[in-house]
Image (cartoon, rainbow, N blue to C red; front, side):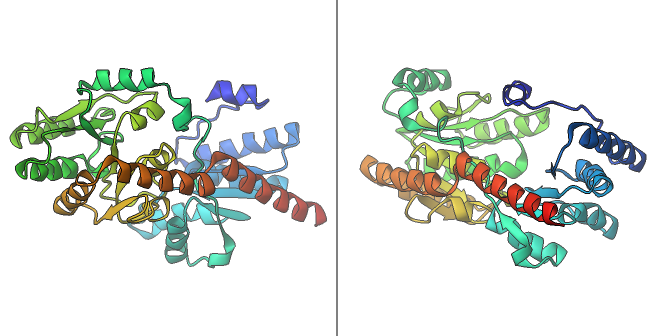
Length: 341
């Protein structure tokens, strides 16, 4: 993203922020404070815990507002870890990336709900626009996947890791195959293992064991996700752990595709049950198979109608433009308050 930063007139300050060592956090805080003074920075915003500690110290030294975005659910297995996580709520303004995340913050940190600003993650609607994807890109994607024209495509995108639910998806597909419902359908698991070779081997073994080799493809991540969504008919998000926001459901909705997602986390906000998609209990292959059965039994016109409702929902509530507008409005409010002190 560095070219985008430069194009917007920003500067990149490189710091060793991927460390939890207290002495490094102190050093980073000093360098940040120096940069704040040199560049006349008026506000600092952190989105991760170790950088947030340094940013908090730098903000206090320089007297500028400090903002945090709480965009994940952090493990808090002991009091020390809970204290480490607490930096994300020590700011002048706390942003949660979904209503679900805001509720988690209230439970975890005993923060008043009115002290949290919910600004959902934004989808770039200029990029994720069905009208902006040429038929050639769609055909090229389907060719790469090795699917035949006219076959129904069920897509599960996401990095290959257990909590993303690929094994749950495979078990659901096995049930559908046993019921004779995959004859004209193919499933695509799209994502990179990022070094999880043992999990990929387990996934391939499950596909083979359920006799799904002719029905399931595992393909590498693609940079052209808009075409990938448009090349599919149904999109699945099967995460067994709650997604704080869940980009897949929102992006698929923006591309007018019906979504089957697990009923927890941000999916409860991005998917309209029985309107733009279906929600199923996490880690439940039978429930996922039943939901896919429901969709596969509907005509293409019903899929289009669900996709239209999803597209309207995402455009109204989860645009990148809205995220930026709401974030800048928060900045301006803090800067006005700071100027009046």
